[in-house]
Image 1: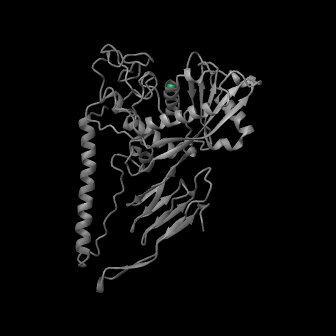
Image 2: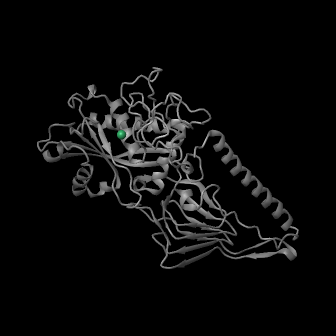
Image 3: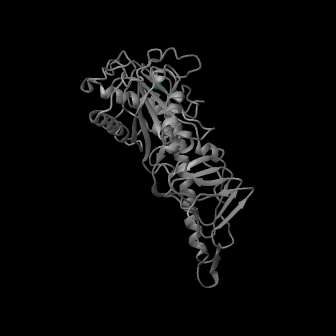
Length: 442
Ligand SMILES: [Zn+2]
């Protein structure tokens, strides 16, 4: 089934409409309950997530992590490390100098410019509001020099070997996303990176970048091109694929990028690849974006020298990865805007929160999955609300340096007046089936 812009608008409108109706009903009913007339009416909590069957499909959809959505209220910073691989005698790659450090800091700053203020798309899809800030930043935490002639010229798919060799010498670097600069080769590619893992939250990410420049003359290095290349590889670490050969190409796929390919088969598309509903874009470095004969774009994953734009759904997918995939362990940030649980729900997912969670009065959060909390965050159970940790776990984020702030149960209160005065009990927490709330400040 295809989803056209009109369909999407309809889904959005009907979602908003439902919200409006429910809000109106709540206001209406609370107004009358103040006079006691509808005190016995129990408002049935909204139990659906619009078109989503359950919370798992809600939490797994990339659009819910677009910057500004309730699940993505803040900028997250990913800690990175750069490792320079040299021969045993210290030759064969960049050598350590203040000048090199400055170039690498500048590379990181330019990377951040791209993610903070992404250039507009060269080929916008009609009806899409493009965003500038992806809510993702990078912080260079370490630059290391490693001498190992055997590993110096690795080829394809050796990122894990390079990672392990670094961790054997510098175990603390497991906390960072490691970028390896080597003079190796992988079938002519300029580098590669791994996708994050959803099953194994401890899995390590890596970027391997094949640096071919004259490494003695730092002025002649094409730092801008190297930055674009690193940005592209980090995109893979955050689950992005190539618009020229590996992005999802069926409009029914939940991760399809409508804001990159459009809502239906492109006019110029005559022969989609087998299994695809749309055509991929051209993906060569030198492709001229303005040439009407070509289909390349300036997308960050497009492999073009003018690469840069990040679409809203790409931003959503990357931010989803730093909530529920292994790459989240490198990411830090906190929003003062809490995530509100305002209808009864069960969470069976494994997710990291960069904001407080508030369970609103009258509602229950039933937790069977795992929640990781950044150190600044707490989980607030309002008076008359309930948290059931049912075999689930609430813990501090992997590699946190301190505990998280814990569960706050708000005290019992009295609501209403005269005959309608009502006791609202303390926020309740029930731990069952070996559920755990751990590593918080007591
Ligand atoms: Zn790639």
